[in-house]
Amino acid sequence: MIRKLIRRVFKAAKNGKPRIIPLKAHGVSRDQLSPCALKTTGALQQAGYAAFVVGGAVRDLLMGKTPKDFDVATNATPEEVRNLFRRSRIIGRRFRLVHVMCGSETIEVSTFRACENGVENSDRQSDVTGRIVRDNIFGSQVEDAVRRDFTVNALYYDPASEEIWDYHNGATDLKDRVLRMIGDPATRYREDPVRMLRAVRFAARFDFHIDPATRAPVAELGGLLQNVPDSRLFDEMLKLLLSGHALRGVHQLRAEGLHHGVMPLLDTILEQPSGERFITLALKNTDQRIAQGKTVSPGFLFATLLWHEVLADWNSIQAGGEHPMPALFQAMDSVLGAQEQKLAIPRRYDAVMKEIWAMQPRFLQRAGARPFRLLEHPRFRAGFDFFALRCESGELDMDLLRWWESFMHADSGAREQMLVADAVGGPKKRRRRRRKPAGEAAAPEAAE
Ligand code: ATP
Ligand code: MG
Image (tube, rainbow, N blue to C red):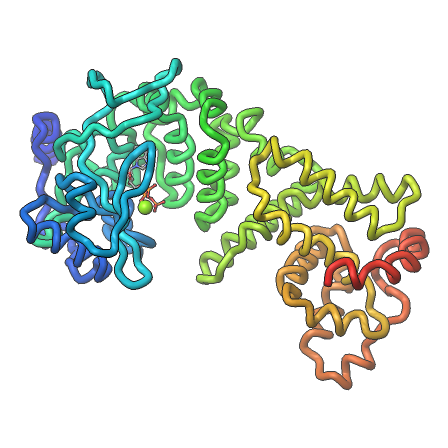
């Protein structure tokens, strides 16, 4: 009976007809959409176009999660969409999309696009590896479903009828927690190697099983990621790191053989024995913050990823006779300079990273006015969280962390009592004697 049903659904999808799932079978009602998504689809439908909520939002709603944004697919061209909404603009080069804005919300509206396989058209361009670099061929909804990446990402929700249109058996895969590529996986990875990263990211985020056929070509095709522009790789890595499942994600990338020599940022994350504990803690911490609904600053995260390189340089420059603060600044510049090309971390994050790093020596100074001044630093919280990771990972003594925690929560009288002339429980004696005079002179202006 079930097998018959599956066969029927599969056949329907093959013939280009979707399986239409009614509200009572899926339970997602239109009031679960954002007002802007409703308004956008409503206006398009009113004007006689087809309009569906599609992709991640439908998938998330079916899993009982709140979508972070809504994408809409329509048969209206970008210009037609643009003309319907006063607050909208056409964006994108690789794909042309329309952003429709209501209040602070933005809905991404894309026109149904034709599938990528076997379509001869002068408006589709691919490079020598088969990677599609431009793709603006409009098509039918069936074709639009075929060119999407995974079956669970190809579900269309019609807000008017509250039906889900399922062309690739995505609803069943979602129930079974399977991530399955639409079409021939190897071909789809060649068209867009980033899909390999997306597979890992979604599997980690939802704890889905990657279907064996979808998984198999990844080991062999991982090298194609080298042809992807740095900025796109960086964006994808950032999504993974901020997905709420960064730790599972980076380990899964390693398991798929997708890090070594392919993505320098991941080499940095996974191949530094001295910093492994620190980075594992930092990723765990990031995941926890996201689970608690707190914000995560990418700059903070990058500061953690590069810290052990800075630390190694800092130590060696000091061993050459340089004073601690100038040595730290030299180390920061040399690490950031070397990483810029390799990791493609945009320069806009440099200031935050430097600020967090430059604050670190100041946590060792617990005498006089210095700890009070540090508390007033506008980014004290970020500096402190970073310092806490250093202590918890075993780099610094936990007593130091406990001291700062008490100091932060004490009233001003009690704080005076707590000041420590000598950094008890701080860095090792030999380092303390060398560090202190220079650190005292240079630290305050260094980070203020
Ligand atoms: P997220 O919750 O991370 O935003 P998402 O599924 O919405 O997940 P998006 O990157 O926002 O992912 O893309 C929206 C939809 O566009 C996807 O669900 C998928 O259908 C399609 N899509 C995105 N990137 C690709 C790609 N590289 N290849 C094919 N289809 C894609
Ligand atoms: Mg999305």
